[in-house]
Image (cartoon, rainbow, N blue to C red):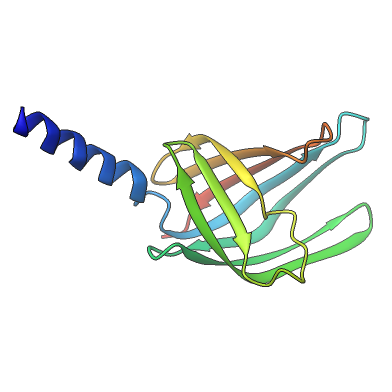
Length: 132
């Protein structure tokens, strides 16, 4: 029985830390679908840096509908279960489209696909690959 409890605790500690996520991720594709025909896709939008201590940095720049967007700020991240990640910027005065709860559709060492919604039928998709 003690051996079974130990194995369960080890398994929980590995899934809560998610070492797959730690590192620098290139944002290969950022897609916004508002379900009203105004879809947007950009490639090479920047990078997300996820650190072991639950902090990170956004270095994101893209153009959407002839408007330039830049999101260069620090954030905190945390995992809920195996496929839910929360991103929250440390500067609450600066709004960010990336500050929300994301569902990890693909979660491997080299590739991440995250999806989220704004609660108003808009779906956002991030496709990322890990930088070596």
